Image 1: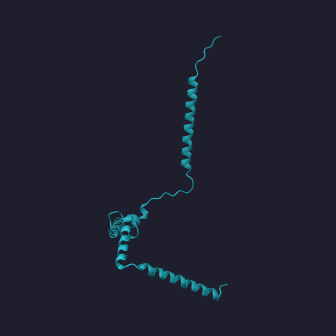
Image 2 (image 1 turned 60 degrees about the vertical axis):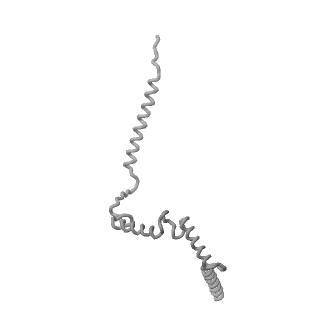
Image 3 (image 1 turned 180 degrees about the vertical axis):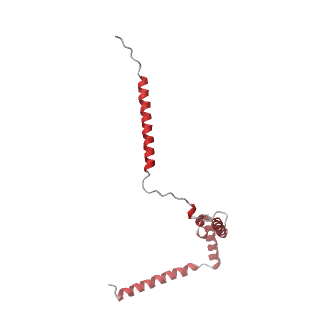
Length: 141
């Protein structure tokens, strides 16, 4: 059973967590002891590294393209897919599917007969080659 005291403790803990998060967000704006020019240089350096290593807004963007160019290319591709009925705009009815109900016994039978024929042919070849290797015996009576 949850008592009033448990509710109060939970509320105090929630308030502490919210204040800690708000303080962390406020500190993320600009570190203490850093001038506006230093902070601006840090931001520009970070953006340059993000572009170089394809992080943040640059993630998935091909080399030599800006994120805006890549986004425009994706919109153009989606519009062409919609116009020509490709991708998610394709007709599902044009795709033919084969549904089977159980094991394909006909295909199994054809395969079994083919293997039996192969075994019989191989056996005949082996028996024929052994018989022809024996030299004829001459009778002396």
